[in-house]
Image 1 (cartoon, rainbow, N blue to C red):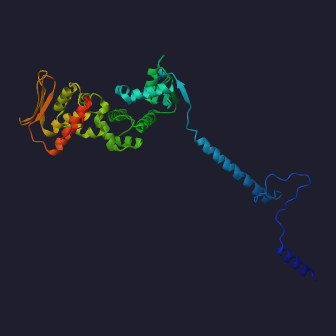
Image 2 (image 1 turned 90 degrees about the horizontal axis):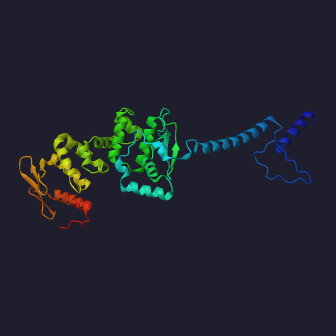
Length: 363
């Protein structure tokens, strides 16, 4: 057989039965078996390709671990520690959106009781350090959000749990306060209006559109809140509490003030003198009805005398009389359609429920 034939025969044998790419050396007698079975990715590293494969496997595992650690770190990178602070060291920010009535109602009393029972505010407030130029004895922090929780702890003499964030500028503080209060759904329409008005007047936002985009809210809702905040003080005071003002009343109240400012202010002063005050919905109707129906109200000159409503052309509209025992009789001289009668019944019902527990009207 020639040398050429021998080489061809050897080549054919190697193709039919290729040599393994790696060999596993059996353990020596007495040597414990490996804890883990051989991995299909296990390669010999005594060659350059083998070393590269091992590096890629190792680097892949390291990459997975680094990715997991980064994800875990991201959960905490924006977190700030909660500290227990003396509430007397904390002042309200100039953007504070709570009116005194917010600390005098039943909701605040309930919040205060919950904080007292828990031994402190479970949900922390947020504050930022005040400017270093503060005078000696001034509060060291100002509130970002949580004015009611801070006030409750202050009145109870309890430390207040707070997050301290030193990296908030004026706009960031405003946005966090607005978002937190709106999400809690306990900020009244009038308070929201005051908050928006202050931001626009201070130049934090150039327009209602910019403000709406920053807080992700509809422009029409912001406009309604602003309309309530810009009402004359006497109109707001007629409701007893500004917290009773509703978004849906803003357009009618603004229109009434624009059409008949003196008449609306006169009616507001008259309503404010009533004791007890009618229900908020009845007050709203009394303020806007004259502007929309052309009716003038004449307050009695002496206690116990009749109230009279006349149309602007001099016709008698309605009379409210008081008897010796304090009972009241209301008579309406002008025709009233079915829809208006239903509205009147609702107003009377709301008024009675605001003073005594009354049954629903029957026909």
